[in-house]
Length: 155
DNA sequence: GTTCTCACA
DNA sequence: TGTGAGTA
Image 1 (cartoon, protein in one colour):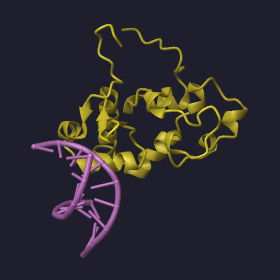
Image 2 (spheres, chains in turn purple, brown, red):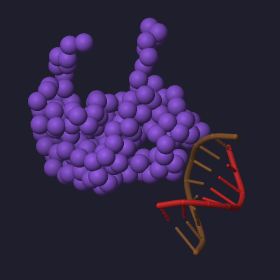
Image 3 (cartoon, helix red, strand yellow):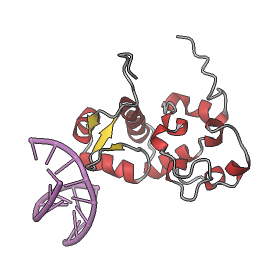
Image 4 (cartoon, helix red, strand yellow):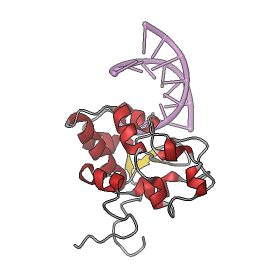
């Protein structure tokens, strides 16, 4: 975004900054990444950078763990229930043959051998990963109470 | 000083 | 699961 507005997807925070904001260890953030809960940007030298959107995701993840009693595997299951095809033009044959359509152990962005539509794509820029991971809205997303492409929220 | 991966126990 | 070694 070049209009001066804040781009919530722009990777700007180092892992140390995020760890301090969330009051968790740096190692914990690396573990969340290894488990597929988060996809931080990597600089050409391999350093992780997190966006405001990543920070929101992590705050939600922390809430699920500390307040709702979920563990990492539980959150992975939860994320695996996101109907990714709804964000990728609807359920077509490519989606029906994709493991992300019937598997429910991990979010689609960590699934191997995904359909052609998603193969080789950068999941960080995918609307499935970029959706609002608000704990309060998870049910809406999973059950389809709202349409991903029709944001009717009035501000 | 920060962050990286990997290894160790 | 947490710590340290050696590195960039």
